[in-house]
Amino acid sequence: MELTLKEGLQHVAEKVVTPEDTASQYGSGLVEVFATPAMVGLMENAAMSAVSPHLPQGYGTVGTAVCVTHVKATPVGMKVWGVATLVRVEGRRLQFEVAARDEQGEIGRGTHERCVVDIAKFTSKVAGGV
Image (cartoon, rainbow, N blue to C red; front, side, top):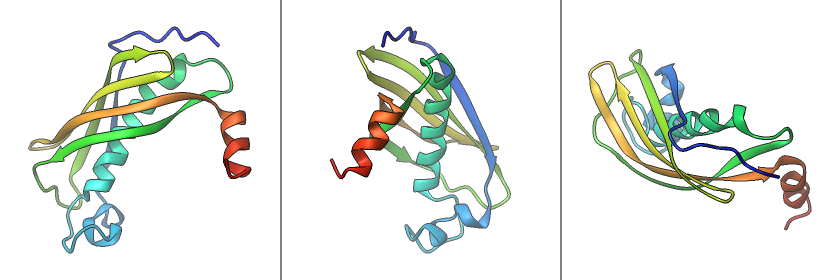
């Protein structure tokens, strides 16, 4: 497998915060605001989506590391965006800068790493307990 991924690939993921996205629903807090795990998921989705169209058939990515800050609360009903930019390709290891914002400004920022995998081989290993 030869990767032809180029630094600078970017994707923006968008959603409206629902009650299911809140800290109280995730069990990560007690309030009805956009949960940090939901924000991380939005950022990961943006990273995955930035590179997926450029991978060979049968390949995908899995998240391996996340380091983010969540600096502002977002209420239910507000639109949020996660942005991921591919900043480094080292073999199968991909590094992204990620950010999230809502309708009032930035709510989080950080880095995310993903690894390119052969989906069939990866699934087989997981099913085998390896």
